[in-house]
Length: 170
Image: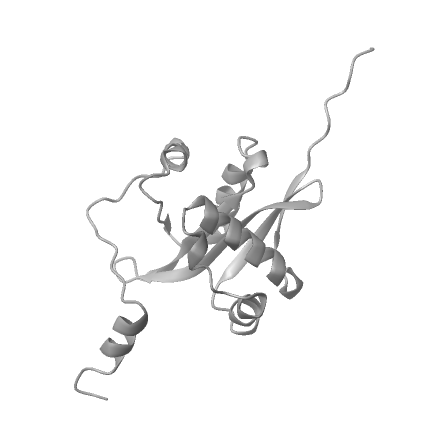
């Protein structure tokens, strides 16, 4: 009976709260850095609190190892006209580098899948950057498929404001 015992690791997922706004921003900054876009984060903790908790524009879950936050996911409902129902869209998923390979990403995605199913959804969708081969392989291992018959479009900043000022109805 001698020998060292293996440490017990507890991983729990909970809904984020307004007091998590600074933590969420920290995760966003880490994710942006990992995605090679660290200079693009302009949000503040107040922006996060207002958009997520006052206006409820998206939802966040926090994953914690032994009570210490190590992961987060931001998601919201989107609507499929073809299915005639709302589904979930995963905006961001991040697991601290030191905690990868422990099943936490899988646990986070399973948690979101359960939310989607409970809400009557048929899909959980997200984007992944092309260079992130490790994540792509991980997602495929869970049964996710690449939807490559579409292109993502976006209108940003000045182009968005120009578009908003055009049209028949000012």
